[in-house]
Length: 424
Image 1: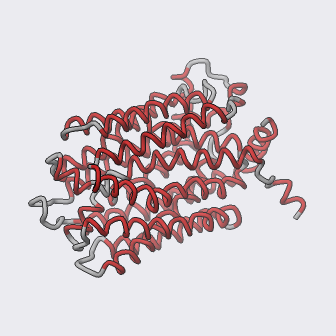
Image 2 (image 1 turned 60 degrees about the horizontal axis):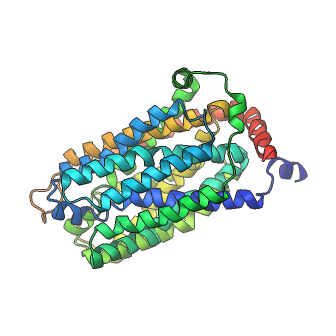
């Protein structure tokens, strides 16, 4: 037991602050992205979008985020991570304000591109900060708390956002996110310490050479592929969630906050549990269990007809518990692959490929799903379920390969991260 305690040091007060701060920051990023789905039916009708247009609008964020992440990857390990976080988060807030000011399809599309250019890099910077400040034996719990931002956005963010949209117009939902983002930005500027220990380990003088060395690393390529496949399911299923609930299952617009609230509540319950389990049991087995649950429930969900509200809520709760049970162990394992000197670039590239893969998935979903009129049921939504199930099976294999790589380098990775913690 004493030996275990030495390997897994308790969180310091500053580390706890960082966890809370990054969780709130992730809350704003996630809410900005997923609010598009519950607002989807309103936006398609208000801005006169087809399903294909809406799929492109959703994917625009992903593609621009992916492009900016690749461009920033070479520079990600060349600067203090705090400074990078402040720069990109400021741009994200401005992009969100532009979304609130959009008046038609083209201005919304442009605003989502701007938001993605900045917002897409923030997740990778946050992960690099977590990897620098916490040993891998701690990261499951850290990821569990940070991933709770997704659940909180479901429980609080989406219902509040929909309330604002129903009372003051959909523009107010984005303004709400921007205001919260500004408060969070001030906390980062004032309270966060510099995160710059990685600067002492840099060997590549050219950012582009550093990017190339990271991209060409064969072990890193396995992690890139695994995370890219992991993102496909969510991006395919999410964009048309509200339109599917309203037009296919017959859930009234006014009941959508209830669906999202209970779905988020289930995720909020499962996140800390999965985070703790991820630090104690095999991460790859935990990922496999979550994957099987998500496959079964997604296939059920995408083949639903009109059913009572409570049944929709129950299926959603189980489905998202399965989906989120995959994210924590997979993300935690992925942080164990890169060396400290490459973490910023690795996380940026991972985030970029994840966004690009998700963008392709969202566009594909927009062409797979068809809606004849603005109020008619979505057609071929069940096809999405079958595609997602196949991709999920492939991701199980890829994550198992990531696990093998992490087990091979785990001692060295833990020692490096422990030194980073000691320096703080």
